[in-house]
Image 1 (tube, rainbow, N blue to C red):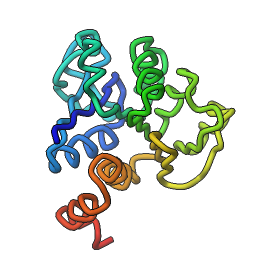
Image 2 (cartoon, rainbow, N blue to C red):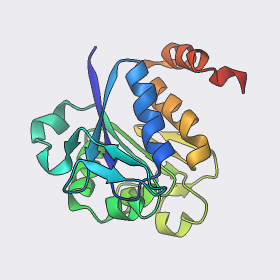
Image 3 (cartoon, one colour):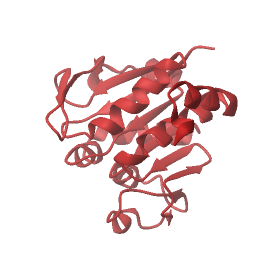
Length: 188
């Protein structure tokens, strides 16, 4: 079955947190579409790495969002702030949550979920120090937290586990284990 997920890329994104899920999802034939939240396709990460996105957020049509299986929000600063301040991103977060589609955020990116008012009573985690920004949630210090259709994770060192959790959510446990073996994640 064909599946598409949008990965929102904002200026100052954390490169590892954005590209690890894109890479692993594409390995299991999920179309991971990198969406620039800027007015240009080339977006620079927090460590100066530039990526060329597949499309602009402003060009996403309602039918694109309707057909998508979910969204991924990488952290990094000021990337997470830029996601949080984007009305388009907040609108899509609310829509995906209302339709019980995958919403995944790592590191500081859960602040965009809070700005979209979708974490009340939900189990979440984030990079240490963002707990206050996530008031109303049931904050955990686990590396990766799954709460129904919502996946959150702590930070860059957890990007592989975050991506594998997304693969499991979309494709099942067997596909996750197969992929983990393929990329030698099982050796750690």
